[in-house]
Image (cartoon, rainbow, N blue to C red):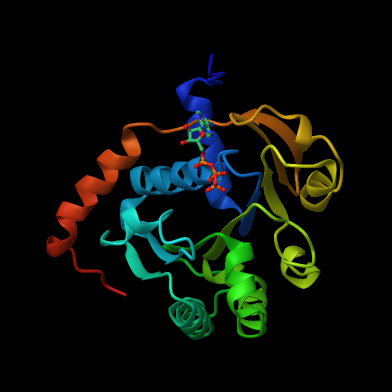
Length: 242
Ligand SMILES: Nc1ncnc2c1ncn2[C@@H]1O[C@H](COP(=O)(O)OP(=O)(O)OP(=O)(O)O)[C@@H](O)[C@H]1O
């Protein structure tokens, strides 16, 4: 029998809403542990909660995970080819730089407009395709994105430092650790073993600067396709200002 973990609706909502508040988030776990479930949960929550104040830049080296979001009015760019993925990261930097200019003009330290989420699934694939170009851009984006309300959400099966270098990893001070293949993978993502003992999916550790707790991980089953369909239909009618 499949083991399904449930949490009351409000907890579901709060967990993903909290993840959306983090400067950047790294989601790690073995194949089938629910990384895409977490990404869909966050994106669905953002679209339900603040559809007028959220935009996405999607980097999808596997070409299957994020493609459903491609035609949303919120999606500034969808990329899956190596060259496109670098351009997508560069676009995120340009947006961030422009926002800093606005902030300087307005004499504020934090951007007051909507959030941009740069969603990467999967980070190890992105790093291996074009590490030389990707690493400095991603590192800079992580360093400067926060104040500009530009956030990186990255999923990976492979949290090894050989694949995801420490200068990248240290920028993700919030992490979701699902079931890992080994104690070593658990250590690479959380600093301690234990994630290898989690159920196959449905539970995970959520670590933020406030602490680390085990959560039941909710899955939106019908809401995600429903909300994608809804917004896809709205696309021709929507004009973003700024
Ligand atoms: N929190 C959850 N609640 C219920 N079912 C879940 C949950 N997490 C994962 N599953 C089940 O496991 C399947 C695989 O999850 P998912 O595709 O998110 O894994 P993944 O970590 O992204 O895998 P991969 O690395 O292979 O892409 C889901 O389609 C779903 O059936």
